[in-house]
Image 1 (cartoon, rainbow, N blue to C red):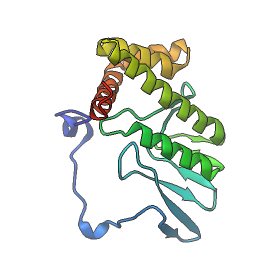
Image 2: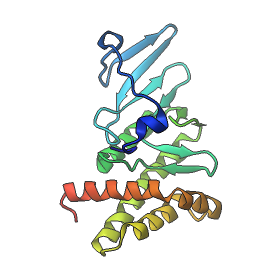
Image 3: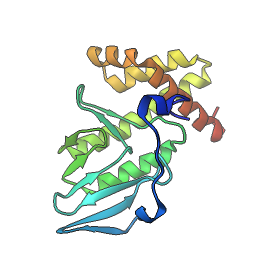
Image 4: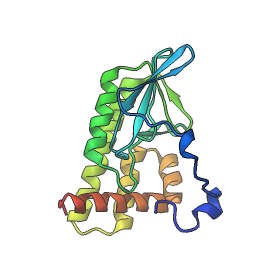
Amino acid sequence: MLFGENTEERLGKVIPLDQDKLKFIEGGNNISLGSREIQVIHTPGHDPYHFSYVDTVSEGIFIGDCVSYNEEFDLIIPPNVWGTEFYINLESIKRIQDLKPEVIYFSHGSTRNDVSRCMKLAQENTRACLDTTLKGFRAGEDTDKIAMRLIDVITNDSEPARQKFTEDLQLTIMGVEAYRYFFQKKKMI
């Protein structure tokens, strides 16, 4: 649903895993990896089954898609895909912040040591995106206009970042539709 009908053509064939190769986990479980112990933390919001993983050796946390980071422009980007429960995701961001990890390992290729700053920005940006889209929907604005306003929120007055995100406008428009679905489900619009 997220990537469209030609997903396998663009990303490759999806091959199911054998059930015997899967290990089911829950928040609170630990995974032993030799000298490392990985603590499993349930961090729903992006997805109800989303987990983050604390590495006890580095005292770092792999936060999955709870929050994304764009290294090129130093931007913290909240999830905005179908099914995201934004207020629950805010609780997960707070849970990560309360763990006080030394480092964040982002899913899409970056590591940050300024955890407090990143989690604060994640909360602020998530709230700002929620407020911006809700205000736009309530004012009857079209999706493109709301998407451009979201880009302004996310890019924090960086013109190069704004230009890059505007080039990828379709992705932001899909995000606006995810917000619309969320607000309709909550009967907020």
